[in-house]
Amino acid sequence: MIKPHNVFLLLTLMLCLSTPAFASLPSMAMNSSFTLKVDDKEAVMDRLVLKAEAVGGYFLVLSDQKLILNIPQPQADRFIQFAIAQGRVLTQTQNSDDIHTQLMVKESMLKSKQTMLKKYMTVLKESDAAHAVSVEQALGKLVYQIEGLKGDIKLMRHRLDFARISFHFRFRDRTTPSANQASSFPWLNRMKLPNLLESFQ
Image (cartoon, rainbow, N blue to C red; front, side, top):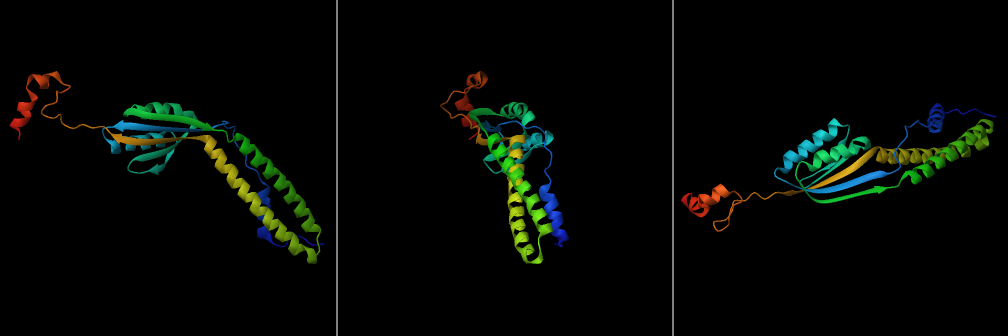
């Protein structure tokens, strides 16, 4: 009979057997997408990023025409109201992904693997030198599977913690009316806009 001789392996096994405690989570992962028509795209994007950070969120994608943010679920509705006030909404879609069931399956698999790990550790302690190597190889494979499940669970819980909100931007056209086009401002029409434009040419 031998005892585990690899301290690093023993510590790794102990970490694999630990299961972090999590707070209760929403059952749905929320996704929202908006197309906004704005006057100053860069300024609006800056305001949205700053607001996201102020409520505990962050940006995932920041490009010329697109902004994707992760916003804490409790803050999502209020953040959306702030965002749509920055311009005119052209399109809007909202949906949710039910990943809670998948999460429960992953957590059940993790518990099963951890129970199996305990059994392997018992076997290892009682194994002779001839069998210890094969048991440690099986343990290594099991540890790899457990760490993968923990990573999947952490990612799923993060998706439930944060609403994902995407924005696409369109520039609000502010071009000068043509000489033959009536202005939306009556006082400009009274000044005979075509003649006024011609005087500046």
